[in-house]
Length: 130
Image (cartoon, rainbow, N blue to C red; front, side):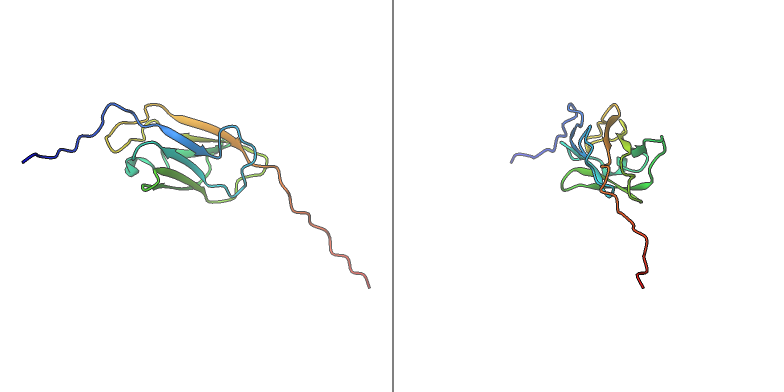
């Protein structure tokens, strides 16, 4: 009778496979959810607000909620408020984020994007035509 053994691959560090908005894009909407997909199953406990951050063009950290979709291997940052039109943002994943085998990204992964410039709502004054 053979025995089955589960061996974790401890040789391949985790990698980011894609991000949204994409690096250098300028067409993200102000209600965009920032996401990063990984090639590996990640340790959800290492994906939190301290390890997935968003900095606006003024150098301020954006407040939001971080979550991890284990089924799709996607980390998500949902800003508490709409992002500012026309402003540049930098997303950062800490090098401390680990996969299920305990291997970390090793170095921070960053990308930048810009929120689209409009269209802006037009407010016209009320005119009483009596």
